[in-house]
Amino acid sequence: MKTFLLTLVLFALPFQLMAELLVLTGKVSSAKKQVVTAPKTSRWQIQIQWMEEEGKVVNEGDTIVVFDGSDVQSQLEINEERAETITLELKQTKMELEQKLTEAEGQLKVARMRVDKARIEASVPASEVSQYDKGQYELTLQRMLLEQVKAEEKLKLAKEELRTGVQKKRLDLLKVGEEITFQQRQLKNLNVTAQFTGPVSYAMHPWSGQKMAAGINAQASWTILDVQATENFQIESWVHEIDADKLSRDVKVDLALDAYPNKRYQGELAFKSTQSEKKEQWSGSVYFPVTFTFSKIPKEKLLPGMSVRILVPDVDKEVAKND
Image 1 (cartoon, helix red, strand yellow):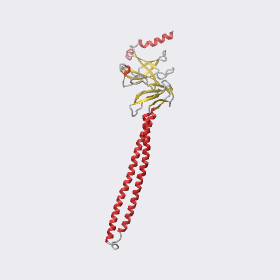
Image 2 (tube, one colour):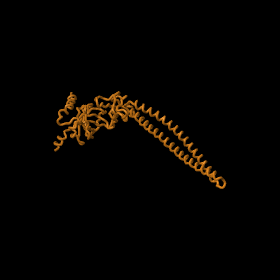
Image 3 (spheres, rainbow, N blue to C red):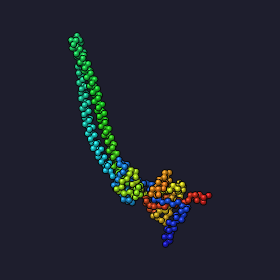
Image 4 (cartoon, rainbow, N blue to C red):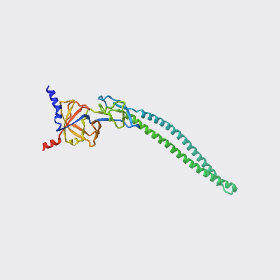
C-alpha cells in the first residue's frame, strides 16, 4: 500500500508543480546510433522490400533492411552487356587499325626503296645517257619523292587513327565501368547491415505518422529505422520554441523513466540545436531537438527507446531564490 501511494505521489508531482517545472518527454537513446535512410536512385521513390523485426536485438553485420533493387539490377545487367560489347569492339578496332598501320608502314618502305632507285638512275651523268632519258629519270625521282611524302602522311594518319580510335573505345569502356561500379555500390547500399549490436527501432512515416513497414515506397533521405548500441546512453527530446530559452547548458534536470517509476535520476543538458523543426503531428508547432545526459549512469538496465520524463526547474525562480 505504501509503495502504491508513493508511486501516485511521484507521478502526481510534475502536475502539481506545472507552474514551476517544465516537463518534457523523451526517450533513451545511444550516442552510438546507426540511422538508415532511403538511398538515392534514378527514381524519386524506392520500395522497402524487407525490414528486421522491430525491437529485435541484431548483431553487427546482420542485415536489417533491404530496398528494392530491381531497377538498379536491370541497369547493371545492361551496362555489363555494353561493357562486353565495347571490349569486343575495342579488340576489333585495334586489330583493324593496327593492320592499317602495318600496311602504311609497308607502303612507306616501298616508297623509300623506289626513291632510292630513282635517285640512283637520276644520278647517272648526262654524258652517259640521252638527254631524254636523263629528263625521264629526274621526273621519276620527283614523282617518287612525292609518293614518299604521301606515304609518310598516310603512315602519320594511320598512327593517329590507331591512337584516337583505341582511346575512344577505352574511354567508352571506362565510362561504362564507372557506371557499373556505381550501380554495384548502389546494390550494396540497398542491402543494409547493422553497424552496432543493439535493438531495431522503426521510424515514423513523415506523411501518415505511422511506423515504417515493408512494402512502403520511400523517398530518398527518409529515415527508415535505426539501430542503437546498448551503451553510451543519452536522452533525446524536443522543446517547444516558447520554452527553448529556459534550457541552458548548465541546467540540471530530474529524469523519470516509465520503466522504473519509483526511481529518479539526475541529468543535464548536453546539446540544444539552433535549428528548429516544424512538427505537423504535434499541431504544427516549432520545436528544437535537445539531448540530455545522465549525471550518473543508472544501475538499472537501460534499453534504447525507453520513455523518459524530463523535469526542468524554473530557472528564473531558482536564480531569484539564490539572490
